[in-house]
Each structure stands twice: as C-alpha cells, then as structure tokens.
Image 1 (tube, rainbow, N blue to C red):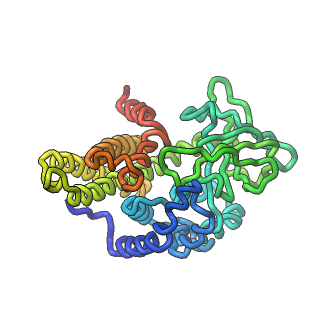
Image 2: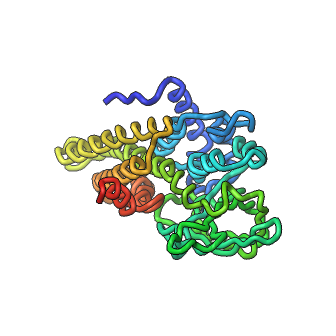
Image 3: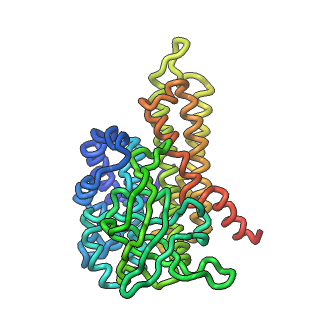
Length: 383
C-alpha cells in the first residue's frame, strides 16, 4: 500500500540522514558496540543536521515545533542500516517534551540552547532495583535543606546515563498520602557533575549494545531548588502524560526493525544457494516472507495513524498502548522468522539479522511490558 504520511521535506531529510549515517555512524559502529556507548561528541555532529533541535523553541536556538515524523524518519534509517544513535531517541524524542511542558522560563533559557546544539544530552531516571513497572514504589528520596534538595537512593536500567549532562530523577519528596502511593513524587533535574552522584555498572545486555544502560547511585547529592521540574509532588501525573510519546517511539522502532529484518533477509535468501538453487526459490521461504510483509504493513498503518495523532496532540494512553503492544509483538515474530531463514548464519553476529533479533527483544519490556499494555487496554474496555 502507498504510504502517505511523508512529504518532500521529510524525504529530503531522509536523504540527509542516510548520508550522515554512512559517513559518521557505520564506520564507527563496531567500536561503539564494543565500548558500550555512543561517544558524547557524536551528538554535536548530529546537531549540525538540525536533528537535536526538534521541538526546541526558536528563541532558544531550536527548530521550533516539529512533526514527530522527522524523528520517525531517523528511526527508520538507523534500523535500515542496522545501527543506532544511542541516547538520541531518549534525549530528543522523550525528554525534551518534559522540558517543553514543565520547565519555567529561566530553566528553558538555561537548558534549551545546549540541547538544541547537541552539547547537552538528557536522560531520565525512573526505574529502581525493586520497582520495575511499579513507579509508585520508588524509594529514592529527596529532602529539603535550605535552598537545596538532598538526594539519596539508587536507580537501574537508566539509558544514556553515562553520557548524559542532565538527568531528570524521579524521587520521593514527601510521604504518600494515605493509601495513595502515587503522591509525593517529584522531578528533579540533576547535573551529572554533582558531588555524590556516581554511575555504577554499565550493564552488559544481549542487544542494543551501543546504548549505555547503567546503574546509578545518589549519596547526599545537592540539587538546587530551582531545578525542580514542574510542581513538587506531581511527578506521577507528569510521567503518565509523557508515556504515550515514549511508547510511540518504541512502536516506531519496532516497526522499523521488523522492516529492516525483512529487507536483509530478502537479500540473503536471493544470494544463498542450497540444493543447487537460491533459497528464495523455495515455497516455504516465499510464504514466510509473505507473512512477515503482511504483518509489517499492518504495523505500518498503525504506526502512521499514531504519528498523525501525536502530531495533532491527540494520542491517548490507550492508543499508544495498543500501538506498542501490536508493533513490539509483531517485531518479535518477524525477527524470529527472518533469523530462521538464515539458518546457522542467523546466529552469527556478522549478519545484521542477529543484531536486529537481539535488539528487538527488549521492546516488549521497556517503556511498559506487554502485560502492562494489555492491562491498560483491558481497562479501556471496561474490564
């Protein structure tokens, strides 16, 4: 089916990003995977394309309000090349909206120019060793002391944290009210040069090797009260309001990885000879890839609709949950089938399908597990 969400400007940007990937990413990607992160100075180069300035108001050096379609194009192109921009999707796609919606004028003047240029990278620290999806159970705490908050606690699975300059930390600033554990949580923006903050282990994952995922600790970290983001005690509602965009980004990534898996597999089966004929000539190969193509196109329609809703400010939590659930589960099925068609070579990291397969798996976990998505959808059905 003909895709209609992109116009000439989007396709021109796609061409720019494709060339940028070929020049700046592909030659360095093996090294990034080996060290476990994308070096900080890369983002300044990415900033020269304008990609780090999306949605940042023009008065702070940004591009102004920009359709999410541009970021979707970048996700599609990195998946196509089987590479990653590391912390980019988190910093620009997910955290910038927090600042847009919650930062006051003084904070915007302080932070946005560096964000727009790619000099300031952002991360958000929610998950703790004992909380997972239960954000209301956060134990990291911050007490007021004069003009500062004193932060203590620990976080884990924090993407981009070893290369971030600012981290939005979700912390308990007051006890919950009665049985409502959601009250009393606040968002504090911490400078990563702060005394008492430490990046612990960089977790060794089975996929997304170039995206640093770390354990963090906070020991009497002083955070100025002017770094409180939004109102004190209101963090849980803020997190809920921003989750649809995060889940959309995961859905887009899953769709793009599945599409890339098919493209790489088609090239492989046409070239691979078995029983003196191309693997692509067997009926099973054709049927499996036909099934995959149909599933990916269904996901594409869902993703495109969700992107349009996001652009219009109408993407609901339920819409995003449906999109994430369908696209991530689909991507898992497609990646598995495509790897199977590679035979033993599919299990070798030399082939892109192995990386696409391992990178896809986490999409059903982070940003809310598939089980959490089903719970949200079921509630919308009155169940």
